[in-house]
Image 1 (cartoon, helix red, strand yellow):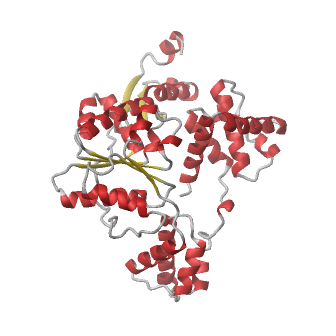
Image 2 (image 1 turned 30 degrees about the vertical axis):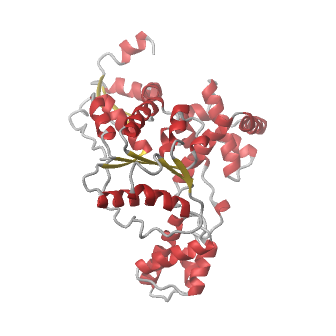
Image 3 (image 1 turned 180 degrees about the vertical axis):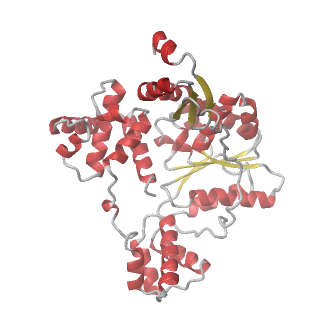
Amino acid sequence: MTATTINTWFDDAKAVSLDANRFVLHTPSNFKRDIIVSRYVPAIQKALHELFSADFEVVVLGEGELDSFSTVTPVEDSTFLPGTEEYTFERFVVGSSNKFAHAAALAVAENPAHSYNPLFIYGESGLGKTHLLYAIAHRIHANHPDYRVIYLKGDTFTNELIQAIREGRNEEFREKYRSADVFLMDDVQFIAGRESTQEEMFHTFNTLYEAGRQIVFTADRPPKEMLRLDDRLRTRFEWGLPVDIQPPDYETRVAIIKNKAIRRGMNLPEPVLQYIADNITSNVRQIEGTVNKILAFQELMGESVDVDTVIRAVQDMCKDKAEFLPSPDVIIEEVCKFYNIDNDALRGQGRTKDTALARQIAMYQIRRMTNLSLKEIGKEFDNRDHTTVMHSIDRIEKLKKTNPEISEIIKDINANINARYD
């Protein structure tokens, strides 16, 4: 912004609050508030993203709105939380697809910081990675009640770091995590590409490792495939033992279904077990949701559980994955969020390098994930013609073959899109 812009519209504006994901600004003039909202919010969001490597909502308050605004925003405690008692080793169904990961997690839980440090568990969503993290925490807590066990997600680490910087509590933040006896981080892939977060994680890792503390990470891919992860972090994640979890095979799925049903007081007939195991194949979370839905169907409808009943109860869960079609709006929104670009700029005529690449990725994703024609995709982007859309798709296809980082970015955007429907 120019000095004239700042002096004209921001001269009497004051920052009210900056928390994990929201920045609040106040100006006593409603006219100035409206101008700031209509013209300058994207610039503020971009500046915040450059500072903190995270996306922020920007709220602008006008005349008379400050007194009614509460700046108190509770931050979730990232230490190990109650309510996860069912996630133990005893309740984890072991099969060929997860036997190695289960054995490694158990070894770590029984002998922290001596076997496999760090332990890095990776696999697709819903296969039991978080279950194993909680199981490690419960077993260590039972064996060593004096140990300080911390569990958190990768994005929580980022958000708490942002708030610590805002409030000048950097030392308190560092002490919180670097004094842990056991450090468990779920979905560590979310710190990749965030410079300040990776720097903090590097030092936290070194402190914990050198002090002989146990570290366990989970992610949706192995460290070598996290192309936006700092090399020094990637090598550290691979120091110990990387283990993967695959989707459960047929026998494991049957065992999981039986286990879940018995714990819910159900005894499913063999044909029902076979039908569910044949049709619900993607992940453990979906299997559990299927069993819960069957039980609810039985309780509400009062019908006996047979194959016909199960088909009607879970027919939406048995749909082929290809039938899942996110809307163009969702895809564009996630691309904008990833690149921190305004929706109107992406759809419109913005020609900056980042905007142009993001627009081409959005076109590519819509073509790949929906049934829209090239002409229909063009309408989503200020009525561009189909040749422009075709050129964009071809360019991304070529970039994927020559630039691994583009493939990584598309994978992350896909994960964010799919997570909205998980």
